[in-house]
Image (cartoon, rainbow, N blue to C red; front, side, top):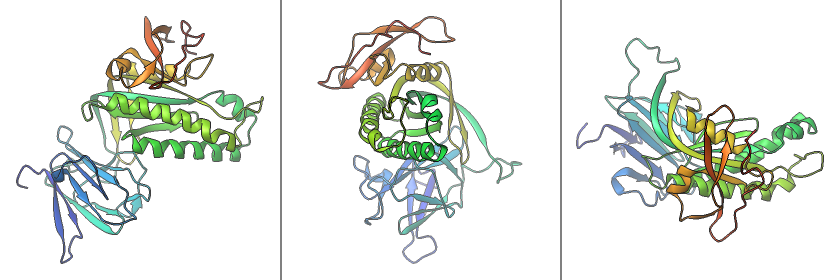
Length: 326
């Protein structure tokens, strides 16, 4: 390795037009990759390739490399299509396909530690500063009671598919989703716009659910369509990265964010509720209510929060402003 590059992604490996692309910390691959400096992007002029198709991230502290798909048509790792927006660990020798182009990952670093089975799951834990969004389906238990399993699955799949498209556009990472919860994260250190991107995503996601809700078979007993509330928090979190799996994020800020999603969109609250720390990072980008303090179940002390809305619109505080998220 030379010139500061820690790894290489080799396009068309073994062919006459083989090309080595250096990776310094991040490498973005796509049709445009707008806003990315030339040394950290590789462009593919093909309509099957998304504008921002995928990225490779190098974590020198953990000696790990990660592949993240951001595309419409998918990215394949060693022949298998990977989950969009979910980081998957890659190692030297792995092959990656983007549209018509096959790549191979090369590095002296980012290898499986000696004595570890290369086919086993490798777990590492790191502390990082995150902005987190949790989307919660309102009255999910009641909707589940009155909806057949197949219709429920189809409705949830359609809803989360739309949210994942938006998440990709807002550069977020899907941490997990299960049942009625959709959990996404942004690394503060990796993007100074993390908070604004998170709030923008949540507002657009809430609007998208309102848009598609009437077309879904998910209904409550009053025949009302599906709605979601979104809580947004920020702070340090312990992140467990598992090969080929979604990311587990734990910590006080995570707990608060999940609890806030339980009041968003209910009893007059705006569909999006943010903590004071998120408000401070994106105060001039959106409209907010006056601050309110809420009790968080299982936590001492109250949390200052704001209802959020697109700039120029009116956010609502709600009658639960001094209550406890359930």
